[in-house]
Image 1 (cartoon, rainbow, N blue to C red):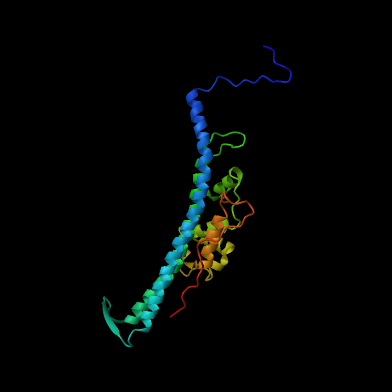
Image 2: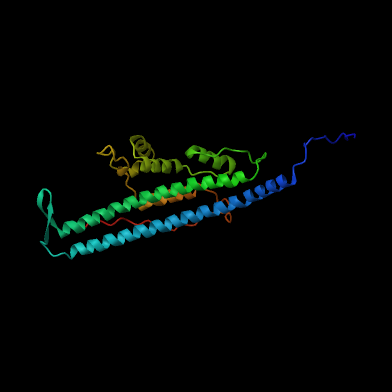
Length: 259
C-alpha cells in the first residue's frame, strides 16, 4: 500500500483489548469528575472549621463572663481548709473561682492553636485527595505522571505544577506555626520567631521543654490562618479569577479583660 505524500504512516501497535479500553475510559472520566468535587469540599471544610472555632471561643467567653460575675457576688472572708500532705493550707472560694477563670482564659489560646493545626491539616489532606483524583486519569502530554507528594514543598509544587493552584505567600508561616505546635522544639520556634514574631511576644521560654507554650494567638491571628489556607486552594467553580471571596463565617472578638 502506497502512503500519500501528505500523510505519514504511524504504527500504533496491536489494538487495545476492549476491557482495557473501557477501564481506561472510565478512569479518565472519573478523574474529570472527582477533582471538581474535591475542590468544592475544600471550601465547605474551611467554613465548618470557622463555625466550630467561633462556637467554641464564644462558649469559653460566656463561661469566663459567668465566672467573673460569680466572683463579684462572693461574700468576703469565706475560707475553706484543704488538707494536704504538708499540713493544713488555707484556700478561699475566691481563689477557686479565679483559678477557673485563668484556666478558661488559657483554653482560649489553646483552642485557637488547635484550629490552626486543623486548618493546615485540612489543606494537606485536600491536596492529597486532589492528587488521587488527578492520578485516576491516565497520564498524557497535558497530564504528566507524578509521584505522591510528601511534605510541604512537594504538596505545594504539585498544586502549582499540575493543578495550576497558587498557594498564599504566608502558607509557609502557617506551616512553621503548626510544626512548632506539633513538635515543640527550639528549631521550630526559631522558624516562627523569624517568620511571625508577633505570636511569640514573650521570647524564648523559661522552660526549655515548652517552646510551643510561648505562642499567644488572638482571634485575628486565627482568622489570618483560615484566610491563608482558603487562598491556598482553588477558586470556587462559580467565581471568576478576579471575583472577591465572600467573608469567612468567623468574627474576631477581644478576649475578656482581667477581673
